[in-house]
Image (cartoon, rainbow, N blue to C red; front, top):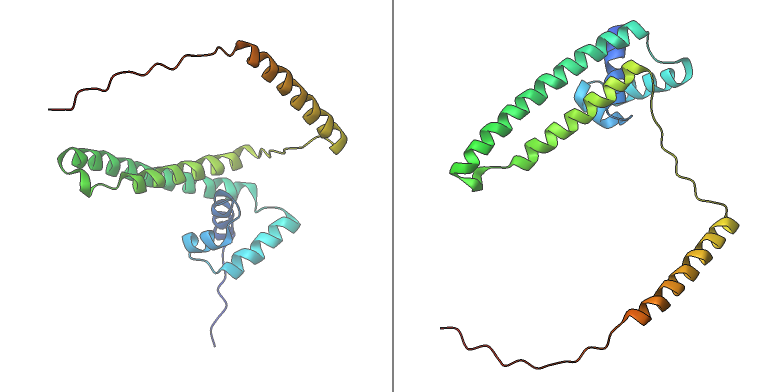
Length: 171
């Protein structure tokens, strides 16, 4: 009979930070933390119901996560520099796009994790006007377009087509 694995509060806080950095993606977080997806799902549901882990543990896990991500990003930057030097010698052996993508992903995760420390998250909402307002705006837009098109008709100048002699054949 297998014994049930127990996790410390620090383990849960670290998983919380990685889950947040991954924008709630359970599969990616499970892969990166090597924790079962079902465990992460249970913890996520507990955090949604009871709030996140203790602030002190989250801040400690956050500092560890950011330090490690910055270290790995630094290594990736070193690889890019070496790849760029190789590019000068043999361009076909370099795949800079993959390393650049890694840097971008790590930068996004560091920025998201750093947002945890501030305790704020920015959500963007886009709202369309009510249907009647939207209809009125579209009608105004179309009528302005018609007026401008009519004004452009007056600006059009007739052109005379003149045939030019053919260029001599190349030598």
